[in-house]
Length: 124
Image (cartoon, rainbow, N blue to C red; front, side, top):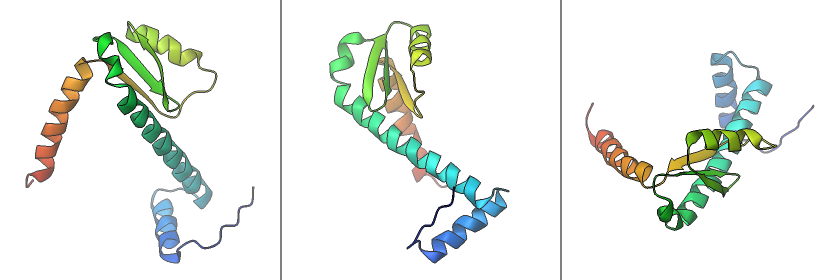
């Protein structure tokens, strides 16, 4: 496929080409990788937003696993095996998904965020 893109900042394009070369990629390979990363980020943002919308409602399912993909809650499951089976059965594989153990992962996440925040402020 031939693609013509106008209006790209020359400095950014030179940096992009140089980074592709450093990584041993052609420009088209690097562009495909960049597109895939951008699409994953979009899907991750949608899944995170869906989790934020649903997390209070999910408290009644303490200890179970909630699965988010395609920007929505796919379901709540008893075991990780159930989660795996559900994800395998999807007709289109998501680029990104979130699996959270309700009530348990939230507590661990809060601890990790504090710990991570303290590391970012330390002088290493």
